[in-house]
Image (cartoon, rainbow, N blue to C red; front, top):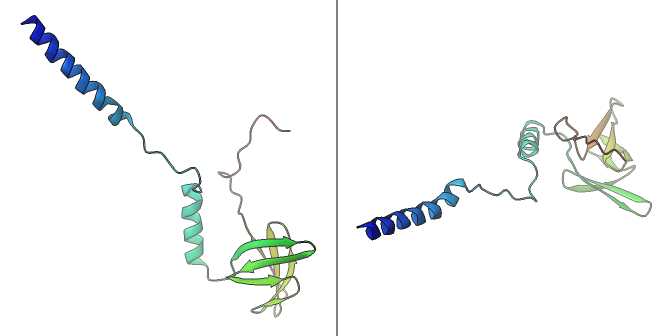
Length: 122
């Protein structure tokens, strides 16, 4: 009888230990995906604005170009009613030719959540 109880107890423990890791398992996130907060913000701004959208900036020697709404533009070229006034590392300045107002398109928008400070400032 004692041997049967030990067998049942051993089998119960084996089942318990094989099920326990599955209950504590976490879904792993893809480290190459951007943070969800930025994805949601990007999607909402993309839907709400139909204006010019900066997609990339390219430096080739002294030539600078910007991809805006799927088209490549160089400094001094015209985009709709704008003049591509300046192309910098992470932003492009457009000037409205009718109102002379300037519009700055940024590749990355800094938020409080995206800037993390650490104690090791070099």
